[in-house]
Image 1 (cartoon, rainbow, N blue to C red):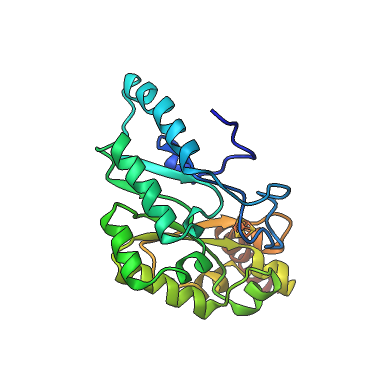
Image 2 (tube, protein in one colour):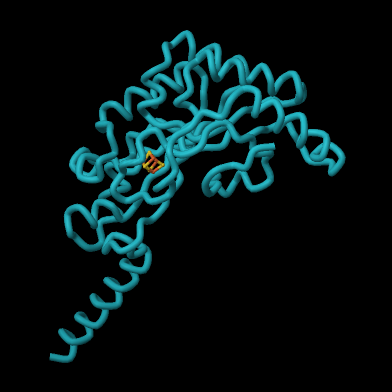
Length: 238
Ligand code: SF4
């Protein structure tokens, strides 16, 4: 079995999910805030190698009694694979793991654009669901500054297309980026308000390092209440 090239990332809620290598690296690999796949060229793992991995590992997982009803495809954006390539890999999964009900993975906005509505519907019927989409910010100037590679409108349209095909998705928001771009402190509330349009089942809130926007809004509110309290006390003592 060939060694997987690069670090493996998967959403925390997929900690117990069977991970299947399908791609390596990221097709974009140019977001300014991201170093997850630096130095790892994008690569599609061959059908032959995917089958070898399934053949070797599925029996082990079965012996360990691990639930295989959900499978997570590895890579920064395996949804970049063409419809036909995804279909071939899903057919392999079904052959080795007939009990698999849900196939989940990271999907970039640009990946959704390359699929027709009919292809999205077919993927849903094949079990593709619960995708993770990196929206990052609900603000166009932030997306552009970070070289995300898509506009806010792109993200909104593609998110809706997924939902119309019946594919649920959880969208990731990278709080703190607005503060980093606009050099403004305590902007988490504004950013969250501006991201309310995201038509996902759930938004996953992350924070980026080295940014004033990282400050937790709750702590900020407590701080402001304390400040107000001190101010009122001073006024009362005048
Ligand atoms: S698309 Fe995702 S994995 Fe790729 S560079 Fe941007 S944030 Fe990183």
